Image 1 (cartoon, one colour):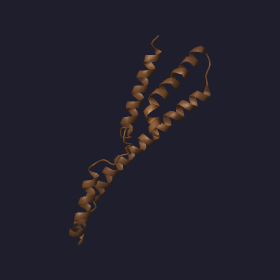
Image 2 (cartoon, one colour):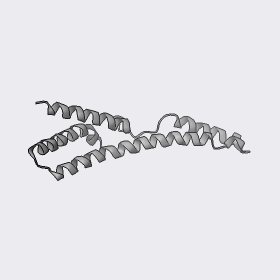
Image 3 (cartoon, rainbow, N blue to C red):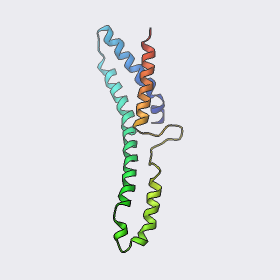
Image 4 (spheres, rainbow, N blue to C red):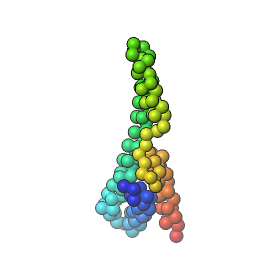
Length: 125
């Protein structure tokens, strides 16, 4: 998956360029189009799940805080544990492979922007 993310901008760019060249020639290659859509989905799904995980982590911190623990007779005992959970969840929960950026929708957007820039470079004749 790490290599897929590293090279996805170039792969998406080249496949999209090939599709546009084929369309300009008057033909359409459904296999390459499906491969392009598959590559796009393989990049989008982990980025979406990373954003979803980050959001759910923040929601869990809010749920712990607003759970009404202070109204319970065991509130003083639970307080320390909930403080640790809330403090840990202040740092976003992320999916990250060491040399790569954090997988989230912002990363997907950045990769797609890079792929589009490469595509525009290839379109210049």
